Image: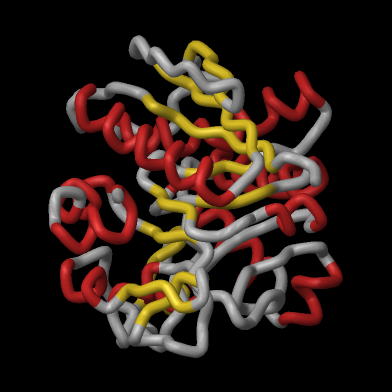
Length: 275
């Protein structure tokens, strides 16, 4: 079985402590090792000492001119340019995964997909702004914590980004808004059109039985990770699930870094992921 090839950033920008960055990185690696045969490329500006043949360390670099005044947005947007760097270097499509993500299932099936995305899921339709006055309901908004591009899709996305940049317009939430805009505004967002363009959104137009988005934390799907949602998570026959959605499988857990830090030391979190 072919390894899944992933990349992530472990970069200190004074938003979170180095200690917390390393702790969360260790959790990601632990979850991957438990569930997958993988190779993880880590781009970092801090010292990382890991004795693991599945880990490849790179010195972090900006592969693009600054696009946002916010350091975190610049860091986040740089994911797509590092995707291109890895594609040019290795000739394959690496999967992006956020540092603050926990993997609960084998993801080898992504190797057979030309792309891979997740959305928030659930039923919440709060308005999310993409760019200008263009909005989308929250439940179909594409998340940025795990995705896979192909080079044709990359070129289409960068062309859209460049066209807006010429008008001095920026997407409200870096890549997530860019992805969502292309899938649902440029394209019509229907399963037929997305599949015709080799765009696979887990739980939406492929692997309908899977829910990976932020909706797992609340029945309404309008929140980030929280203790109530954590207390409703469980394993059933080695499949990770939530009592809020008992008919769905959870293959990855979506956190924000702040919410993960709040939950990391709880007994329930340790029981599920650290023991």
